[in-house]
Image (tube, rainbow, N blue to C red):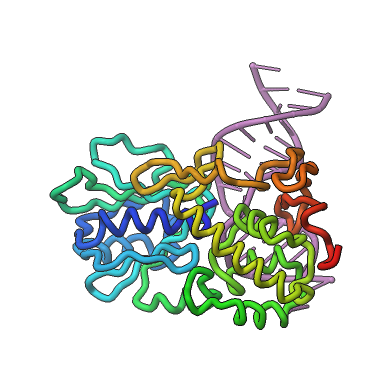
Length: 282
DNA sequence: AAAGCACCCTGTACGC
DNA sequence: TGCGTACAGGGTGCTT
């Protein structure tokens, strides 16, 4: 469930506590978490390195190191990056542990990668572009303008919801925020991308950016299952502000009709058939 | 280009 | 109680 707001929240926490610190050791509990290089090389190449920068690209956590290497981490479904003191007992789903040098303010001397479902992945590379260059634009960047969004959508005929989940098209949205954004923009999830009117594209552009910004402001969304955690272990509060995701059968906050739930591309899709008509003039 | 499906995983919910 | 199954959704990769 980590989508852009959750990854951004984690990155902000790590940036504050990790930048400038040295990785004194690495332990890999489950080698499947490491895409490349092999786990032995991964440990050897990270030991002794200092973190120079922590950033985000799409749903990737980007950790730059003092020797030009970059550690890329994707949390996928259940990945968590937790800054904890060594005394804090290690959770049963801890897959990779980074031991950090002493730090003046906090006792957090471990960065633990917990990942119940083992979907998360790490890549240590000299060439992060090889992984990141496939990604679409950042929805919160200044260069993601309405005009650009219009051009992007005009040449696509797929379902708008599936397209917005495609990270090569646009990064950051996952199944939670895509449902929210489409409801806010009053656009049916099955609409063909190139069928959106200028006014609708403007509304969608605004909805995507506002829902992502609002969720970042609340530290992301932690669902009932508690899968997402900030780097300090706290939950995100945006779950209280979700308007359609997970609200099947409940009255639409706009018109009162029950929120419907259907499958689109194997994913649960929540929408209001009255507020989100299948055609622009519906 | 787009859609569908299997797969990667594990915990939870549910029907019988 | 317990077993089998569906479901959750971040992706990739293959086929149609």
